[in-house]
Image 1 (cartoon, rainbow, N blue to C red):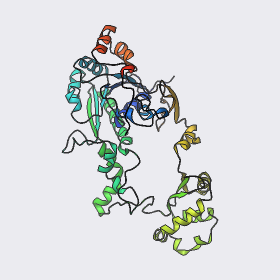
Image 2 (image 1 turned 45 degrees about the vertical axis):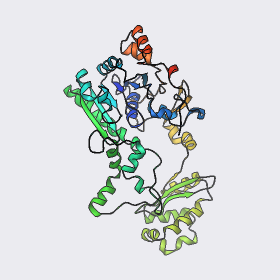
Image 3 (image 1 turned 90 degrees about the vertical axis):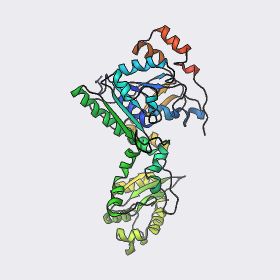
Image 4 (image 1 turned 180 degrees about the vertical axis):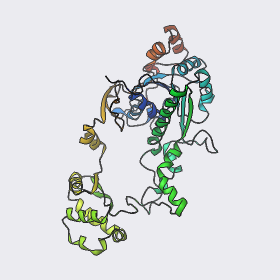
Length: 416
């Protein structure tokens, strides 16, 4: 088998929730040995986040948690217990990379901030990622990705023109931030290879998110044009939206990028009489009559399945896509062909699909071969075989609550 790009790299993953753990997962899928450190006194919030296998809310049945922690070894460790210090000392000595996504100052209170870790391992590469960064007047604000949506301006520009600000469908920054961090980690690894020197990197997830509104921030800074809510419509294209199709809650998205595209769309629709109205010949005219244009296109699309509309429009060179459901995505022939989903057998959930990375390395492909760990699942292997603790020392840590077994962890969760 081809050697993976990060094979031999060792990561102590103190992250939780989503933005931090995704970095460790990407490293693990390309060969790194990643140890996920999880306090059994305060389990990862994703363990109590749905969906749960068979809708039974227990800590080892969350599909959300499993997606962010595949390919990792999982240990339980009460970081607040003084006896945990020897464990963390050995972990830091062993690791090439330490990652954390707790609130500012939390790792310092545990004696695990960068400066403390650097004294143990001078070559350590250490990254921190949190909501607003490690410094600044608002660094101690509490929140999760949905609050970053609001602070980053996304809610203000999401929704219909006559609606109130709308929360977007997910914690957007959680899906953007990891890639910035991953790139920084790779840069730090290259620098260490040349200099032998480690590095500390800290990330504001808000700043990562705001970068995706860059053109609109610049437009306001230069031209004082404020981006407002406009539903599915585009400033320069028309028609541009999501239209009803045959079936229950079935839709298709399409975008007409030019007047030439418009003529092609008219041809696909069979050039009905209404398309001959000169008001619709130019994008300016279509924008001025957008409600009517959208209604008329919807009258056409509703007689077809979304897949039929997709085929007709794509065949004519018009940008279009089916609005797919989760069921559609799992059966999508393109995703299947590219082997995007990997089924692994989780000890509690059973067979479960995991996303592959959204990129392919031709000579060092990813390997997804371990489901996310249950609470403390790999304690014996990590503490004994990797960190070198004896059986007696491990038993003593169990007795004193420094670590726990999966059987000792809470079995149910409360879902709000």
